[in-house]
Structure formats: C-alpha cells, structure tokens
Length: 360
Image 1 (cartoon, rainbow, N blue to C red):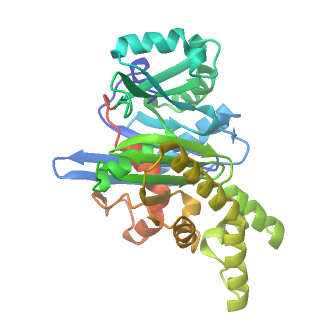
Image 2 (image 1 turned 45 degrees about the vertical axis):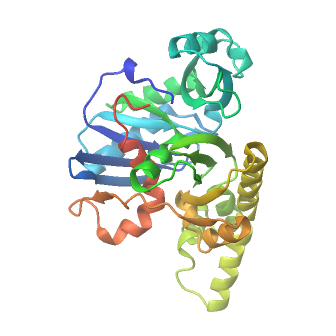
Image 3 (image 1 turned 90 degrees about the horizontal axis):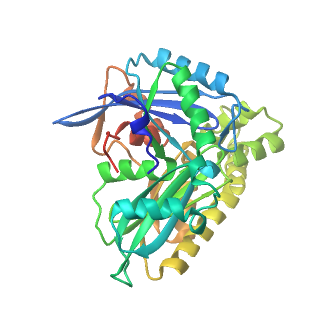
C-alpha cells in the first residue's frame, strides 16, 4: 500500500478522512480491549469542480471544506488516514523470482518501466506487498505494486496540511474496504469475495481471497451516471436528482414511483453490465476461482433493488456491506436511527479509521 507515514509526524489517534469527488467523510474510531467503536461520523457535500477525475483542481477550496468538516464534527485529533483511488493510482500484480524485500524494492525502482507506466521512478511514490509463493512455480512469488505520481499525491497532502492536519498514512482506495471486511466478517482462506464500491464518479472492484487482494479494477461509471440520467429525463437539478435516486419521490402516485424505480434501475444497467464483465474477466484470468459473496458499498449501492439485480445477474449472493457487525458506535455522537442508512456510505471512512501505524 502507498504509505507516506515516514514523511509526517506520527500521532497515536488517527482519523479517517474519505475524500470523494462529491463529498467528504470523517470517521473517528476508538479502539480498546473491548473492540472498536465509531466515535464520530460526519459527511458534508463537496462542490463540483474541486476534484476532477481523481485530480485535485482547487486545493484552497478543498482545505476550506476539510476545515469545515472537522469543525462541525467536533473532532480534535490531527493525525489523518486518507486514500487515493481511481485513475490517480496504478495497481499492478506481477510474478517475480523469489527475493527479499530490499532486493525487490531495488528491482522495482531500477526496472520500473517493465511493470509501471512511468519513465522516472523519482517522480513516483510507490510501495508493494508480497502476496506469497506463486501457485504454479514455487521459485517465484506474486507481488502487488502500487504507485502514484508525486505531484498528484502532494497536491492532496498540501491541501490537508493547509487545513491544519497531518497525513500519517496514505492508503489506496481499493484496499481500504478489505480492512472493513477482515474486521467484521468471518472468512475462509479458500473462499473468494468481491467488494464493490460504487462512488460518485468511480466504481471500484476488489477481489479478495484469504484476506488478501488478488485482483482490482476501477471504471468511470458510477453514481453520477445515474444522477445525470435522472436529471435529464425528469428535468431536475443535480441535487434533486441525487436525492430522488436514493430516496425516491417524496410524494407521487404508485404509478409514478414505479416508473421512477424502473428508470433508476435502467440507468444503473451500464454499471451492472461492467461489473458483470469485470467478474467474467476475473474468472477467465484466474481459472476456477468461485466467488462466494459480493459486498456492495458506496452511496449508490443503496439504490432500491440494485443488490437483488446484481445477485440475479451474477448468480452470486450480493448484499450491502455492514461495517457494524463487529464495530460499535457512540450513541452519544451518532443517532441510532441513522445507522442503517450510513452503513454503505461510512464503510470506506471506517476502513481508514481502523488503520494503524505499521500496518501493511
């Protein structure tokens, strides 16, 4: 995982900060011998144009919104865990001869062009994780390499620092939900699970086996695709369409509501089709790997009947991810009435808040 913790001051209490293209989320986790507790959670909208295709376009505006988020949350901790995703991050799985980590780091640095689309590794932050021995050749090992251009990473770091915070860990978006999965779910090392995050501008897919990522893919069909289609068909503002996408019509005939629900699912079909294609590709690449379960997160995962539609299309059990199976929450700071509604949208920031210094 991309990790810049050595560059910044280290704090014991880390706070998850999920920077999306349409919202900011804060998640403060308290950990003790009795388990993990979500102490604070807050989400605020992020105006369009601040982040475009994963690239920070307006650093000053992002800093102001982060300050607003922390002020409104009441959170006093300054150590931050955040993540990068989408096109700003390259994730590559490769198979190499067995070697130690120091030799591997030197090899990746010196021969980066073979594995990553960068000419000069001095312009890149990168990290890797050894997955283990290759299934077909014990003299080789499987590696996941993660990299992002320094100018992209630094733009986010500078905006967060300008808000008075310290970035302790910079994670990678596809891997964040693994932490939520491992913390909350019982898993068998031989079973394969697909974790899908349908964000505003990017849908991220991570296939996990034995608590480890074995395949990832992002594509630029996501919640905004559905919102914009609703906006055009029903002549709505973007905010109106966004609200109706999840909540439905506040008032209206049964016929109108049925038409709306059918329209939303129709607009979601391209996303479902791309998910289906991705899982088909995974099957063709990884042979006999059987997918046991699909876990969905992200605001658009709550679209009525989307989970059922995916289950039927893929013939696999699909469900909304539940980050509160083994994680509690503060009844003083978080309204119990909101827990069901925040599960899929809070999952990523909870995954960030669970990270600790030294994690790999």
